[in-house]
Image 1: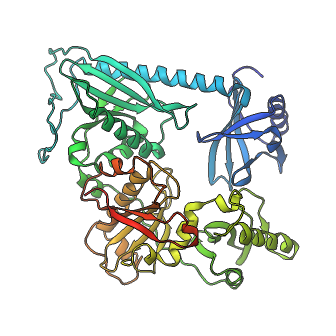
Image 2 (image 1 turned 60 degrees about the vertical axis):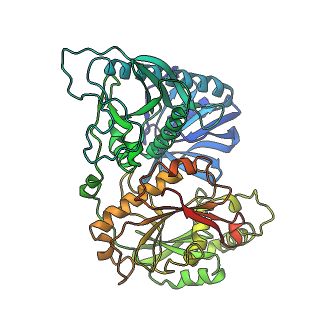
Image 3 (image 1 turned 90 degrees about the vertical axis):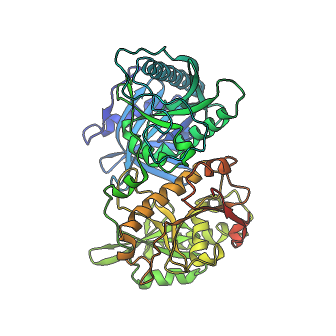
Length: 552
């Protein structure tokens, strides 16, 4: 194969040839790094993944922390020593990009990525600097918000429509570096640029890796933490403004976060859109809060019902303290302390049950697979238990947030006695589909006083905890204002208060990210956010250690 092949499309006539070429490519290297959709790479041996043909389809299977997962390969290409696969599974319901890199060349690849991102960072710095130096300059604090109440140090206002004959001194690039990576040996995803003008310095940031609306929470969290540190630096003149440069595909998501910031901070931050060719940038008008409530919303889904099925009730009865049933659009899912292990689907007017942990081969629950079925239940009872001795076992470590959610679903009053126990909506979606806006809300509850509560759970440190919770608040509040939640009877005949939802951010007391308090204070105070610290040994029962308002 050539050093950089074009993308190969896999079809019925080429699967055998593609299989041989891919096996030939991976054979020389014993150790590999595999990454799915840009996530942290997983180190695997050559024996832990394979390519093979089944039913006229090219399959890529790999051992992961979730067990063995199998994907259908639809396209692939080779770029140097890196192999890129376009794959799908579950009849095309899930699609992903998988990258395989030999361990021996991983350091060289990281260095190449870092150099490319640094070059992109310097290019972005030059584009913004030139824009600021030709007259079409950045909007100053409060220039487009007549209702603004300043409680921050005022900075220079800049005319959006200057005299075309007026020329401003070109901005000087004082610094253009990358943000720290998720790990010490990885390059950062965001530019860290400081521009110097005659009487001020301006901070500029933007994504220099692949741009995706799902990463907007990460972008804002990173940008605000950096901006906060810059404002405490002693160097003069101080930095009082931040420009966040975004691609057009994430502009709307960025505006939705920007408008929910505290006024004193929001007035210091501007969004700039860069064109698809990365040649020019332009200032974008900031949204006002009322625009969120006028925006057209996706169809609000009705709550799913869970009809009684005899065989399902029998399974639940084997471990009623651990097994719960979650309704889906196409049937039901049975979970053992939050870990899905069986699915019920209606096929040809008949309810059928398949079992198997995600990533493993699913088997029909029939007389031929009884031994496998009881072994799975036995393993779940042994390893997915709060007193499990082998705490490194995957059954114990997997789906921690779902485990915590399953505990709270049984009695949400353990978190807050003011919440009604039922109905309680877990993994609640405010719309059916869409690649970015359909992330499910961990728990949606109602208080006895009629106020909604949006509950976001974490069991490990997550810097995006705050912005995820706030984004869920925005979506629920938009539907509440239009009466969708009341009309859908999500909470029966109980009256929904004409007040915005509360946000409950929950994690074990030592598992809140160190930046949690800083980021919580960036959110507008009319969005009530509460922190709930729970006990570290929550698997044996949830206790609230401490709770308090974090953005008053």
